[in-house]
Image 1 (cartoon, rainbow, N blue to C red):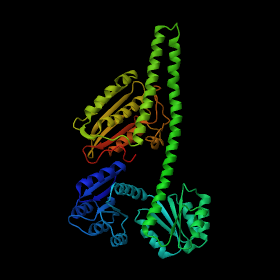
Image 2 (image 1 turned 180 degrees about the vertical axis):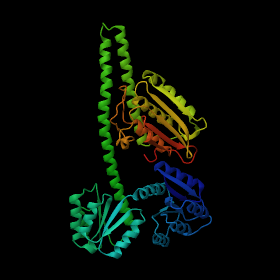
Image 3 (image 1 turned 135 degrees about the vertical axis):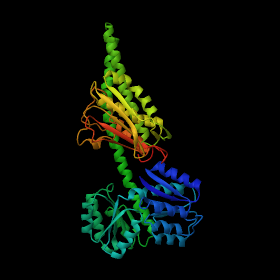
Image 4 (image 1 turned 120 degrees about the vertical axis):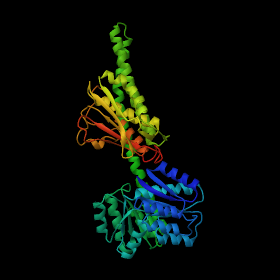
Length: 490
C-alpha cells in the first residue's frame, strides 16, 4: 500500500488528518511529530513514501529545514503552514515543493486532502508539452514533475500528434503559441478532430494580445494561460482538467454499471417472481392435492429466498460503493466466528448431500469488523455450495501465514475456467460455470468480498495450484496494523 508521511507537531491535528486521508483513499499514513522522528522514519523506510505533508514549525526545526530533509530523500512534499509571505512562497517554489496549504480553516484541510489524492493518482498520468524552446520545455518539465505527472516534451505539431496517437496515457496537452505561431491553433484543431474533450484536455499558452485566447478556445482548447504566469496557475489548470476527465470516466463507469444492474435485475427477478405468481395461481385453485400444495409452497419459499438474496446483495454493494458503510474493527479469534457462520449453511449442505469439514487453528486472531467479515465467509461458503456437485465436499481451513490470518475455502466443483480468473471480483461478473443445483447467482458476491477484504487492508485471491475444484484464499491482518474503513479505495 502507498505510504504518506505526515510531519505535524500537533498530535491531535495529525490524528485527524491521518484519519481523514485513510478514510478517503487507500493510503497508509505514517505520522512524525518532529524533524528527528521524520528523519528516522525516512531513513528506515527509504523509497516507501510517495509524498509527505510538512509542517514548517516543529519543536526541533524552523524555516525550511523539514522541507530540505524530505526533498533530500527524494520524497515530494506539500507544505502545511499557518503563515505565508511572498519570500517564503518563492523559496518553497524554488525548492520544488508540490504545493503549499495554509492552516486557516476547514476548507484548507479539505483542499490538502484533495491535493494528496490528486498527486497520488497523477503518478500514472502523462502531460504533453508542445514547445520548440528547450529552456521553456525544461521549465515546464521541472514544474509539472512536482505534480507527480509524467511529462513529455516535443518541439513540433507533427511530433505532438504522433505522441498522442502512440500513448494512451496522455491526458493533458499544453500548447505554447509563442514558439509555434499559428500552427499552434492548427495543432489544437487536429487534436480535436481525433479526440473529444472528454478524452484529452488542451491548454493554450501565449503572451500575445487578447485574441490569442479566443483563437485557442475556438480551435478547441479547454483552457488558456497568458504569460507570464506563476507556476501555481499551471498546476491548478492541469490538475483541474485531470479532475474533469476523472469525473467523466466515473460517470461513464456508473452509467455502464447501472445498465448492467438493470439488465441483471430484469433477468434474475423475472424467473423467481414468475414462479411465485404461477405457484400462487395453482394454490388459488379449488382442487389441489396436499402433495402439490406442499410442492408449490416450497417453490414460493425458494423463489422468495432467491429474490431476497439478490436484493440483499444489491443493497450491500450500493452501501459499499458509495462509502456509506464504516468498519468497526476489533481483534478477535476467527474460528468461533467461522463456526457460527457455517451453522447457517447446514440445511443447504444437507439438501445437496455436501459434507462441510474444517481445519481451524484456534489461536488465529484477526483485526476485523465481525459483521462485514461475516459477509466474506458467507459469500465464499455460499459460492462453494452453489458450485459443488451433489454429495461433494467443502473444506474450510484457518491458519497463520507470514504475519497474516489465512482463511481458505475449498470446494469440489469444476474450478475456475482458464482465462476467466480476471473476471472473478468484478461487479456483476458471471463465469461460464453454472450452479449445480439451479441456485441464483447475482455476480456480486465475490465483488462484495473483495471490497470488504480490501477495506481490512487484506487480500483475496484464487489458489491457481488447487486442482480439485476452486480454492479461495483470504488474508487479513492479525492485529491493529492499520485502520479499517470500507470507504477507502472503493
